Amino acid sequence: MTIKDIQDEIVDEFSMFDDWMQRYEYIIELGKNLPLIKEEYKVDENLIKGCQSKVWLQGEKDNDKIVFTADSDAILTKGIIAILIRVFSNQTPKDIIDAEMDFIDEIGLKEHLSPTRANGLVSMIKNIKMYALAFDAKK
Image (cartoon, rainbow, N blue to C red; front, top):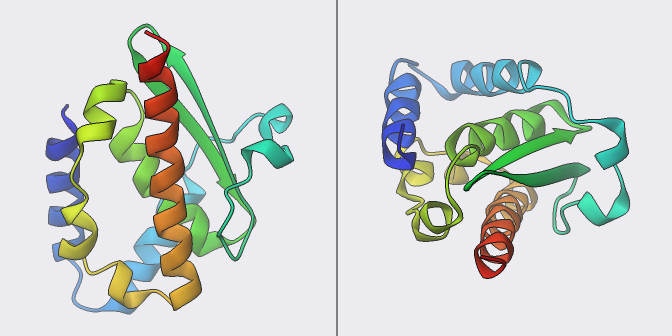
């Protein structure tokens, strides 16, 4: 699936909910289903700066695609990174770099987060794109 296809799928899923309480519950549920990151990756250099809570992000190249794993010590934040991993994991560096992020606004995520969580979201996206840039440069 392309990044755009996955983003469209997420927009469709979020449109099924009537209010933001249901959407928050769904985000938390997504976080609970996030595959666990290996303990060896829960180190300071994998912490995302700019997040209120702790978020670890690890990316590895598998053939020509990047596979991400992550974790957070906050349930809502864990759900947010789970959404981003769903979108960007198993995609090529170029596709990640070129990806539009309109789906975040379409589901209304940024406007329903506290300012510190919204900053954290931006930091998560930036870190994912930095992994893509780094792997793309190694070609």
